[in-house]
Length: 209
Image (tube, rainbow, N blue to C red):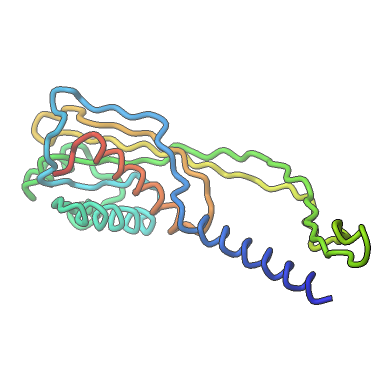
C-alpha cells in the first residue's frame, strides 16, 4: 500500500522540478536580427534607452530594467525618462539629450502586439507496477493507476517586440532585432525575458567588449 504513495510523491516532485526549470527558462526567441556590416564589432560606449509605451510607469520599469542589464555588460546606459520626462519626446529632443549626455547610440524598443493561440493538452494516466509474488507470476506485476491529469485547453499568449539601435550623430541604423515571447509568468518575467533575448543578440552581433 505504501508503494503508490511513494510513486505519487516522486511524480509530484518531478512536476515541481519541471515547473521550477520552466520558471527560470527564457521564453523569448529572436525571429529576426540585422546589424550593419560596416559597424560590426563596434563597442557601445554610451546608450540612451527608450521604451515606447502608452503608460509612463511601464516605460520607466522597462527602461530601468534594460539599463540595468546593459550596465551588467559594462556598457554606460541611461534611461530616457531621466532626461526626457515627456511620454512622447520629439526626435530632435531625443538626439539633443543623447548628445548632451555623451551617448553615441540610441536604443528604441517598441511593443508590436500579441497573439493568442489555443492549445489542447490531452489527459495522461501515470502507472506504477507492484510485483506479484508466488510461482511464475512473480516475474510479472500488477499495474495500478498512480495519477491522472485531466485534459485541458490553455492559451499561449505570444508578445512581439522590436528593438532598434541608431547612431546619435548620423542617425544611422546600426542594429535591429525582433523578438517573440511566450508569457510564462508575470509582467516582470515577460519583460526580463524580452530584454535578455535582445542583450544576447547584441552580444552575438559583437556590440559588447
